[in-house]
Length: 333
Ligand code: DGY
Image (tube, rainbow, N blue to C red; front, side, top):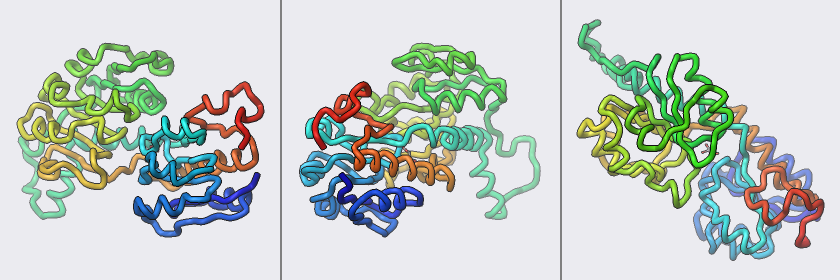
């Protein structure tokens, strides 16, 4: 049933070409910026399929405006921007792009671990400002990385990729999650309760999806359990951390520092965070490599095209709408 497709923002190839090759008509926002909330509602009306991004808030009102749409194919592994429960209630398929951004997100997690502990960004600023006074025994001392303890919150693919890199640094790896992490176990990581992880880790790195359960998982109380020499790293989703509480912890020396790629209210960040020198602050770059973004675009396109062609999309996040065992979709498209 080739149909009408919306692509909500300019994205790299090959997703757009895949979609164009399979749809009757493609409406694409060719600007590198999100549609407004009202613009999005207008744009989804009458579409059979939508390729969207984590910057699009696909809430109940957008889903209502998209009456008759079969799929929202999100070009992201996270899908907290989509009201999946409401989409499922309406029989709308939702897909994501898992797997392809695992390694580059793990790389960036390591950039933050090394960057914040060894004061890389601060040092760069000192050099550019001409303030390097010459080598000094007390100058810009940071924290050790090799041989320390890494605590991973979340037992998934990205956590395992971060742990794999940690073996080269001779680190003890702990993890906490609701389910066992088979790959983490295989790497010698130890599953521990959250309290123990917070109290004993030198680096606490977050790798959980955003949900009601994980919102503000790292709050003032959790931060108070961390060691004053420890660092918080977040490449997952901003609202997992209570950012105002983090600013207090950073200012008062409750923890040594933080390396952040994501923020509670992107693109803004909490008042005071930018003034904390013991931070490395990146603008949500976890998946920002040329090859990874192309792979995400391809997978989002493939998911969408599968539905246009009456096939089960490979990365369905509401599989109850199309059980793996059923060859045809239970409800007609
Ligand atoms: C994702 O895919 O969820 C990432 O946050 C994008 O960078």
